Amino acid sequence: MELKDIVAITGKPGLYEIKAQSKGGIIVESLLDRKKFPITATHNISALNEIAIFTYEEEIPLRIVFKAISEKEHGKKAINPKESGKVLTSYFREILPNFDEERVYTSNIKKVLQWYNLLASNNFDFSSIKEQEEEQEENQKTKEA
Image (cartoon, rainbow, N blue to C red; front, side):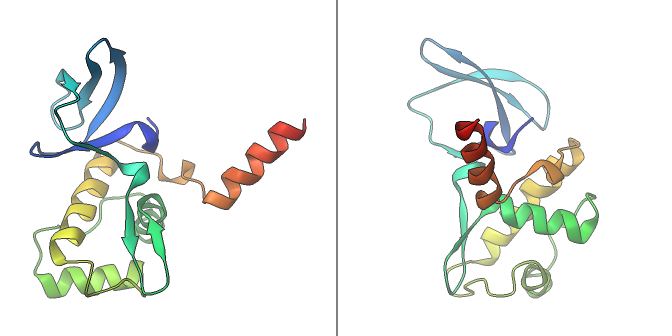
């Protein structure tokens, strides 16, 4: 399971792994209950690999935030997303000290922690997440070879 294959579907709980391409869209499998179903162009999906968190300087890819949480929690689940807003904001500040508190709402933090915990409970390998620079260097070496 790679982060580029994990999507969130608007209006549906949890996360979904892309399993196959179909004539009318894609087939996904829920990470919550392992049920598979088709997703068509009428569904609004967001690939986790494409989501970023606002900071005061730039946008930080969600994968980097997940990696930071994983390093803090040693690959285990993070705090409960149902904690108070103060607790969640304080925890998130430890992960991403310069996040833009005016543009990143408590609901966003809850969603990030829910997604992280769901991935952690599905034994996602957060250590496989690479920084963009590492990925570009590897791609460059592959092209040169």
